[in-house]
Length: 397
Image (cartoon, rainbow, N blue to C red; front, side):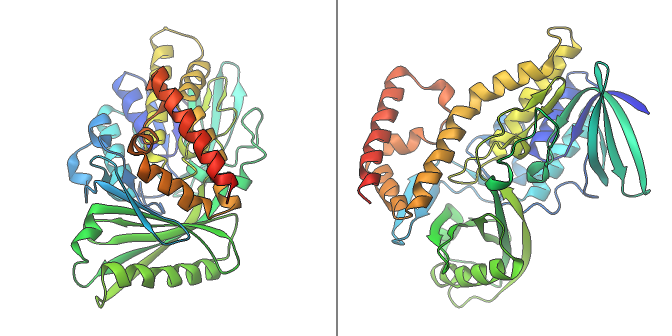
C-alpha cells in the first residue's frame, strides 16, 4: 500500500486546483481520475465568470470567446440582457487539462483510468480504494487527507457525508456541439443565452447557447431522470429555434453529449475528519443558472489551504477548517438560489417577473452576480428589499 499525504479523487476544476495548490505548498499529492484523458466526457457549457483566469492563474489561451452579456428568456420569449463584465467561454477538455498540466508541473502525481471505489478509516489516516482500469487491479492508498471531487457521480453513502436528497437534485442534461459551415451572426459570439421554458409534458427546462471558438454549445437540462430518446427529441425541437435566429440557412454538424449534473441544495455535511467533499460533489452549483466552475475551483483552493495548514502544523483537522470556510463563502447564496428556483419552477411565468425586475433594477442584477460575503449592511438592506418586492409580485402570478 502506498502512503501519501493528500489524495484527490477527480481532476475537474475542484480536484485539479486543489492538487496544484497543495503540491505548490509542498504537500505530496496524488490525484485519481477515472477517465483516460483529463477533461473528456464533461457535459458542460464551460462558461467562466469575469476574471476567472486571472484569479486562478490560468493562461488566456484556453479562452474561446469573451461575451460581456447574458441573455435570459422565460416563457414569454422576451429577451432580457444583463452585463456580466468580460466573461469567458472554453471547453472542459482545455480547462481541466490545463489545470491538470499545471498541477503536474507543481509536482502532483495524476493517475488516470483510476475509478474510486470507497474509503475507510485507518487510525488517523484514511485508506482510499480504487480500480486501476488499465491493469484490471484493485489498489489502495493511505492518506493523511482526502478530497472527494468526482462531480455529480458522487454517490456518497457513508455517514456523515450521505445526503438523502442528493438524487432529487440531479438534472439530466443533453448537449450538442454545433459545428457551423459558416459563421453565425455577430451577436452570437458576444452573448451567453439562458432559456427557461416547459416541455410539452409540462416539465421545466433550462436550455443554453454558449459560443466557442469553433462551435456553439447548445444544450438543455431537465430536473430528474429522462430517457435519452426524450432528451434528444427535446433538444432537436429547441435547436431549430436557435438556428433561425443566429445562423439561418447555415449548414452544420453536431457532436452529442449527455450526462447527469446537479442543481439542488448543497450537501449539508462536506467533511468527515480528514475527508472533504468539493465542487459539484458538494452540491456547489447555482441552481438558477447551473454555474459551478467558480465554486468548484474555489473549493479546491480552500481544501489545498486547509491541507497545507495541517502539513505546516497550523491546525490539526483540515476538514473542520475547510467546511467552516466554504460554508461561510457559498452556502447562504446557494441555498437561497435553490429556494428561488423552486419558487420559479412552481409557476414558470414567474421567470419573466424576475427578469423584468432585474432589468428595471441594474444594481439588483449586478449584486446577484457577486458572492455575499463582501456585502455591506446597506447592500444587504437593498437586497432584502428587492427580494420582498419580488415575493409580492410572484404571489400575484
